[in-house]
Image (tube, rainbow, N blue to C red; front, side):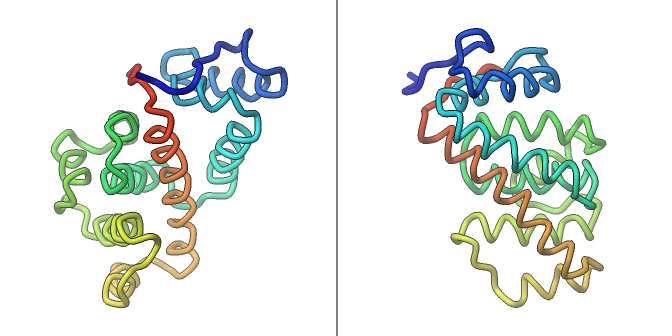
Length: 176
């Protein structure tokens, strides 16, 4: 059972309404997901989440296919079924096959060694409070990821950890 009220755009705190409305417009359902509707209970939480989302969309260079792979790898490490379901859905929509999505969730190899190296990096970071071994970092570099891209991967890690931890904290009911 969820701990936090689930809002509509109309009954959300006034400061959350514009953000929640914008999120609803890009939602796969055309309405806020429970994740967003509960974050709206605190305008600060919804604004923080929306800001991370907007910044990665505006300034990110990894592209949707890689970013959703990172979100899925992180969600699996965080251990939240809601976030795994959401990331899996968008990973498939961005071009990953069902088998590749399962591999990304399980920490197994896809047929994309370059993305696998970066997914391994964020998975390890998510599981270890941001810490990664030098060998994991070097493996991602050797796969062709620049230092800038390795730093950018942290933004997707942070966005997914933020959302996944909130979902765990709030005990949000799945609506996917």
